[in-house]
Image 1 (cartoon, one colour):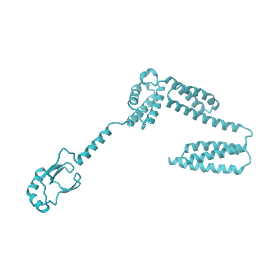
Image 2 (image 1 turned 90 degrees about the vertical axis):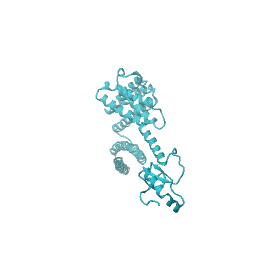
Image 3 (image 1 turned 180 degrees about the horizontal axis):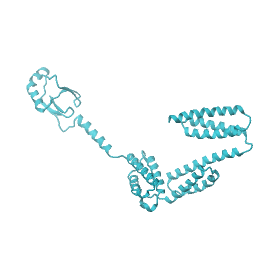
Image 4 (image 1 turned 180 degrees about the vertical axis):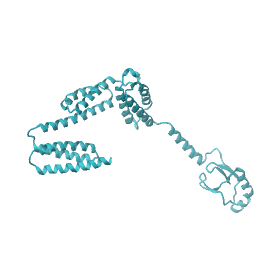
Length: 317
C-alpha cells in the first residue's frame, strides 16, 4: 500500500513523492508492498533511486533510467556554478574602477608631497589600461580615466617614472596646463582684461596637443573661462557707462529670462543660476535709470519666481 507519511514535493519530478531515508528502506518498501500496490493501481514500483533534489531515496515503476542524463537539479546547479564563476572574474568595468581608486591614492600622495611612492601605482594603472579593450560599453569611462591619468602625469617629474608609462606629448600638455592655470588665477583675481589677453596663448598651446579627447577637454575649459570673463567684463563696462540705453538693458533682461525658462524646463538648473545672476546685475543697472516702471516690475517679479523655483529644484537634487 502507498505510504501516507513522508510525502514531499519533488522539484525534479514536479509532483509529490515518498521520501525514504536510505536505499534499504526504499527497497524494503518495494519488497513488502509491490503486489498490493500493483493490484490496486495496475502498476507498482520496482526499483529505488537517489534524488539529489530531495536528498533522499524515492521508488519508481520505470524499468529503465539513464543515470548519465542530468536531472533538473543538476541543470540548476550547473547554471549556478557557471554564473558564480563569472562573478569571481573581475570584468573590465571593475578593473577600471580599481584604476580610479589607485589614481585617487596617487593624487593624495602628490598632495602630501610624496611623489616617490607613486611610480609603482602609475605602473599598475597603466597595466590596467593596456589590458582593457576599447569596447563600446566602457569606452567613455576609460577615456575619462585616461584624461585623469594624463593630468596626474603632468604633476610628476619625468625622471621618477618609466618612460613607457608616460603618454606622448607630455611636454605640450604641461605647457597647456600651466597656461590654463594662469588663466584661472587671473580670472579669480578679477583681471578680466588680462584673461582676454591670455586666451589666445592658451588656445595656441592647445593646438599643439596631439591627444584628441584631451584636446577637446582643454578647449572646453578655455571656453568656459573665456565666456565667464567676457560676461563679467561686459557687465562692468555697462556699469561704467554714464548714460546706458534703458530699453536695451530691459530687453537684455527679458530675453535672458526666456533662456532661464527654457533651461528650467530642460532641468538645467545650474545654467539657470548663471543666467539669473547675469539678469540680476543687468537689472540693477537698469534700475538706476528712470522710466519703464511696469517693465521693471514684471522683470523683478519673474526674477523672484525663478529664484524660488530653481532653489527648490536644486535642493531636491
